[in-house]
Image (cartoon, rainbow, N blue to C red; front, top):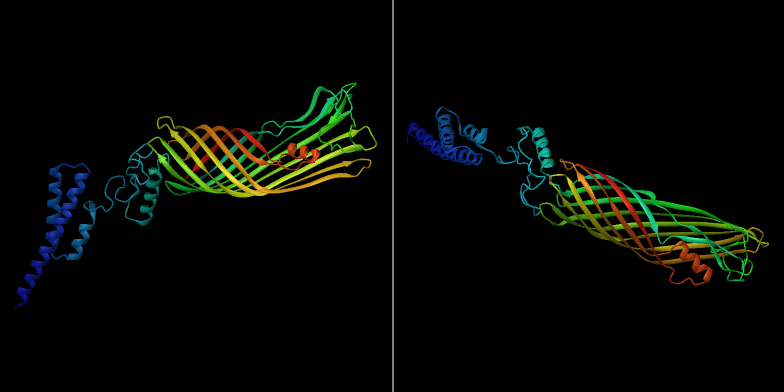
Length: 434
């Protein structure tokens, strides 16, 4: 077979292959432009042009590789499609979390002109598109700072009362009492979130609150002060004084680490569940003193109560969002169960002798904590700034409180010392998201 004939057969086969390749490129061009809204006439022109150009390039001496490069270049080939990606295959809201496409907060993706063939430009465009695609309910990486203004409950302590001094061991009260009742005090909470995806995140939060109160009770003429914290022992039984002072301090802190994930959602509502670990600590200090009208002189009573516990935590939170205003209603409920040791000590010291009355208490048990919060917030149109304020309440159950412990020591009954302590008040938070 002559060399000329072989050459003609080779060119014929190559032309046939290029015809198929050109047809595929033209079909791709037609489908792509049709998806972009071009008319049928424009599609035919573009298809014929791509087909003829591919054949002419080969007949003019270009090899198959050059023709294939042409088919892969230009506007006729878009591996990511045009819709919401500029051909960069940018992430879009595809309902992978169970939400409809293009819902509130997810309709402004669009082509921003930042898509190019360079690696840096493509990565930058993808990051921009990913941020723009975040719907309002999406979990985001970021941090927050929160102001707490809480009042402790079930913590008021009566350290002394005024009596008429008559009636022996049971004098009649005359009205005034020395009460340590803490008012609202400021606290704070800081937190960080690391989003795993739009539907889940890891969260770390630290909370601290400190409060205290002091009180002085002075007897009116003709009356005396009866202490409610001094142990009713022989030396001080029935003893009277004219003035009593006391101070009481409380604090708590928690460190939480949890996993949070979307459970249920609609276009304008979302419910998340969370589960994790918690470390909790609470401290209470009390000092009370009064001068007894006997040889003991100034008598001082002090107590120190501490708890350190570790356990599990979990709960639910919800938000209902208004796309038109950026306002949202939120609520959350959390519960934790921390196991740890409660330690407490009681000391009574007399100025002029009489020895020291003391007690040391330890008890390892579980302490449940329940928390609830409800409030209103606002989020900007970029979904990266959130402001919210609300009312919260927290209950610590089976705690050893100062007043409960002192009463137990004075009555010599150190069983079932546990009480419930609450914290309630206002919160205000600012969150920055990325």
